Each structure stands twice: as structure tokens, then as C-alpha cells.
Image (cartoon, rainbow, N blue to C red; front, side, top):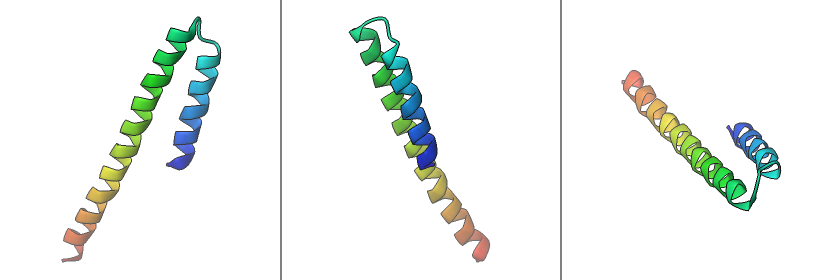
Amino acid sequence: MQAKVVETADAANAHTADALDYVTAQIIAQHVSIMTGSNIQLEQERARLFGIIAAWDAD
């Protein structure tokens, strides 16, 4: 998962470097930050749910 976060951040940096102006670069960076945070939260929730399912299956 960490590799995906780095890949997304690198892609965002590439897009912000080519942005038309400062405001556009800030908007791109903000959206990527939100999406990256969401992806991390979803991955954590997925891992938690897999743990619950594994515990149920063990019973």
C-alpha cells in the first residue's frame, strides 16, 4: 500500500509542476491529499474487516 501512496504523490507532484498557476497547483495538491488520505483510511478499514472475518471463520 505504501508504494501506491508514493506513486500517487509522485503523480501529483508532476501535475502541480505543470499547473497553469499557483492556485491551480494548490487545488491539485489539495485534492490529491484528500484522495491519498481516503485511500489510507479505506485500506485500514479493509484490514480491520479482514481481521474480524478471520476471527469469525476461526470460531
